[in-house]
Length: 360
Image (cartoon, rainbow, N blue to C red):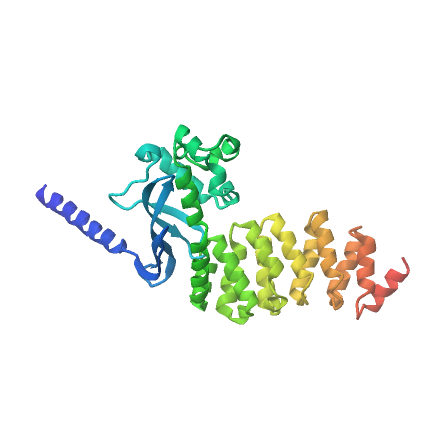
């Protein structure tokens, strides 16, 4: 029994040590400090144990002043590497308070997180003077009261008794510090960062990296082009549709890449399949892909058949066997007029096929 208990304790101890080692603190590198009468902060780049940039945080102090009274606010903000707000934390020993120094409760903190997470908040469209009353109104209704004129419009964007705080903190979370974050990430630009972004599964990172790779013609690098193409295999249909639209034709100039694109089409959602077929319409296709399209012409639904026909009519070098395959389709009543025109436009149409078509 003692041996068993000792073994269990040993396993638990080893597990806790392993957990402690995995939870090493994130490295913080100071990138900017600012101190004014109304704001003080230190901004840090956060890195993981591998030295990869993970995000930014700022330790912020700002007085929230209502008439002649100011409330000191200490708060830490976190953003991703493109300045998208993620969360806030209140340092140990500090409090966020509402009117009359009432501390935020759990519901208030949840509400504030919701407010700060909304980058399209109506708070961006107002000046603070439009959200609160005159000095007389404040004296009568409380220093952080919302004016009647804006109450219905803005009530879901603020916390009762904390209008100034919500307004101030939202503009800090989505204001000038975000621009500084974006500028700093631009300075971090590297191949490693681009691959990290493309493989992140975080769509703002992926859009940003795709734009960089294409803008700087970096898709000729196999590592980057492979990481970018793998985005098509993800679950984000909007990102996949965008990517297939902007990918340069050069990426699919080899047979291997065209086969990969076809295989991706076969396992993609219908909407993305149609986008990929449209991409084939811009490419000079290898015979192997032409044959796959011919098979798809027979098996696809009417919309797919129409799209495949649109692709094939630009392929003027179909082989003899492919031409006879089309002739069989015509005999079966599949896109008869369109496929006849497609065959007659071939640069090297088989004489016997030409004769049959001209006698119809």
